Length: 206
Image 1 (cartoon, rainbow, N blue to C red):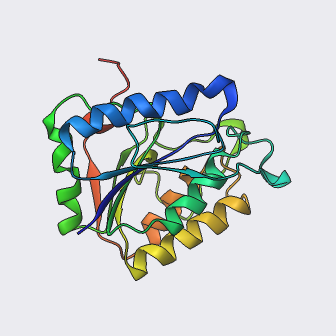
Image 2: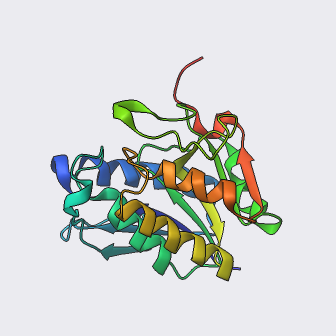
């Protein structure tokens, strides 16, 4: 089974997030050396031996999303990349992630029994700036953080990813990023979901 670890980062702020993703990939490679590491970016001149492939992509932002947190088009490029990934098992990582010990090597093992894995977001339901809490979902079902997401490439997941992309691009839940749509889809899906413990979304707070 092929394994891919994917980063999607634009060149804004003088390659800050591209360079962050390189450091993140270095840390994960220490414990997961048998995966391929892919960077999607518009930084066409960026070179790195850390990544197995650097794929050019654009970060266009539709007008309906201009008031969201990710004005650089990060989420738009992310959803396009997740849908086209060729690997059997895939882990998407935000640039601000870092592998601290060998426990991260077990993450892909979860996909032997589950379709998707993610940890809870620090804000369990983001209702800032008047965003909807999605009334049809109980408040006891919180959002997942979408900067560490693992999934198997199968028909059910591809359908979910397409729906996630469509809901986000249509700004269906008026959410500042794509976690509202992901929460909705996880709640109403029949996917087998593994919820990662909070140390897999550790934010440096005790």
